Length: 421
Image (cartoon, rainbow, N blue to C red):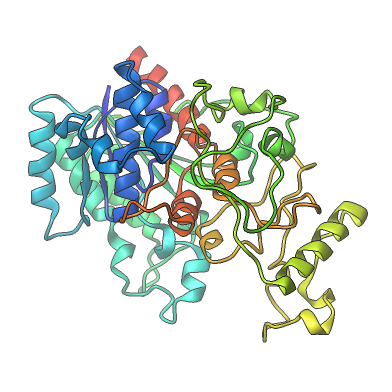
């Protein structure tokens, strides 16, 4: 079964669908860095399918260039990643490119979700106009255009909880507008709020998932997947990673320990290829003042099981003017809890909200640790435009992604439903 991925990001949603057996026709994404990540992941899947994974290992070890890696991949595969904005100016050209890739083969499914800033509570609070008039508010209308053009049997639309309450300047909910637009295109929808933690992800991450079906029936009720209960603790993420301090580690490889937690294999995080390098296990450097705050936060959590409040810090460590709100701006990723806090794109700006739980390491999380919380496989490589590894680009792509494991569970359920039909 074949699908399109719109607003694809770094491919977390798509990776879950590929693992469940779906075949991507095209990914459409605006960010150039994310598009290179998608191309490199496309290269991985092609080389894995052709039993020629060695060039990928060489590339992610830093031994060959990206250009050389791409010469080994059919051009049509690389062209299936379309790096363009979805807009009224580009949509016909996008249709033409997808038609060239797809021919006359039916597209069974469309997945994706527009950027969440337009609907998120945080996005609205940070924008001086409360996101009123922002063009991203109505990107869903282009999603509908793709439904009308390709008439897939189903679609999967993902977004933040703020979509439940976000309204335009006239007080109309965007979710209601979407529902009407989906219905006019011939689709009935079913909506659920899912927490990734309920499906094997070691992170509390609640998202709206809308499943749409092309049907003339009055109602549609999707058979949502059952929760997956687990006693696994967050420390599983760190179980086989070597200890490093702030400013240490390697972009290209780290030597994993011999005692990985079983969750790493059950979740699909740990690579099944022993030679595969584990990339982006490299920590930021931190100011001494921040390291002192990190020590206070870790000690407070480990000894008292209490979170640090910014107002509790010694005056000499308080540098922010705002001392009444956002008091939890420094937070430990607690290894003895069964879920971490939500990984978001702000991790690209600083790591204060994602402090490593081991006092002796005294640092924030590496991109690889964040990627594991998002259940990206260890063999997933995050790109930059230049081809030079960038922690910042990796953090941003990871924080914006759909957890791969959540995507896989949804895809597996949908695969069964579509097969039965």
